[in-house]
Image 1 (cartoon, helix red, strand yellow):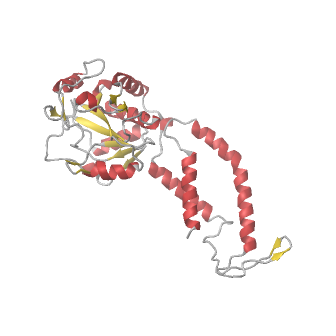
Image 2 (tube, rainbow, N blue to C red):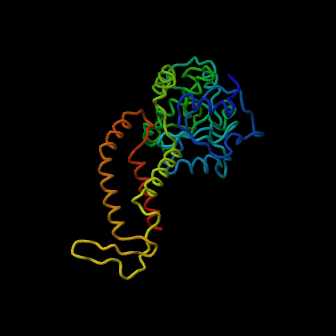
Image 3 (cartoon, rainbow, N blue to C red):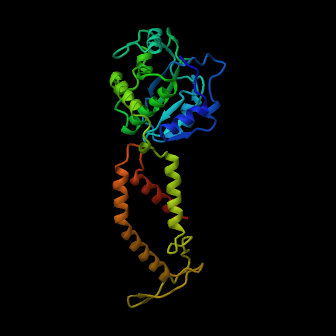
Length: 325
């Protein structure tokens, strides 16, 4: 039993445990104040969203922040995207746990149980869980396992909360262990995860302590890196600052195999452009060994490190958009 962390303390714990996160605007004061109690807090509940989400930040800022027609947001405190990024959705009372078994609540408070918990009460006849639990919505359907990155982050997020409050892994439960109406988080249709194994993993993560090398870049970080790389490539000496207009009927002249230095509108020359492309190709080729070495180092990082393929795709998309202008 404890007083909830403040929003500032949440950020500090995420940083301490090297957890990549993104803040949804207004999250720190977004809650259901006036619609029930908040605290004392006793534990942490894992949920799945029930759908495989393609745009994690938009889903967190939309559905999870605003809620549903019959259930106002926030619907959680934290959400975890497929890449392991934590999204901060709300702070204070949130509509996530609903009604649940008072026997389960007492077990969590006492941390005196073993095995999987099997609640006999649910949303209609249980006690108010929104007052007592932090909640995380993991963005996947539950009809299959969550991603490795999601599971790694969920363990570390749990450890960060336990570390702050001095709790053990027995303060981490599944929604399906709280409410008889639920089966999340799942690994197959209507199949709840084996939470004793989850709690054992959380305990191991907590015992190991914060691991600096396990730091993850958020999706926002990746977007910023991609934009910086694309901007650097675009303004390099051999890449034109804008696409040369092709409104001249005499684009080039051939003199055997030599291209003449024919001027385009805007001061660009075909010869200069061709030379620039060739030089850029040479530079890219020279970088291949470096890229391979970097990728080897990146692949050796813990889950949540930089995905070079994803980063390269973002850079390519940005450059393609500029070329299309």
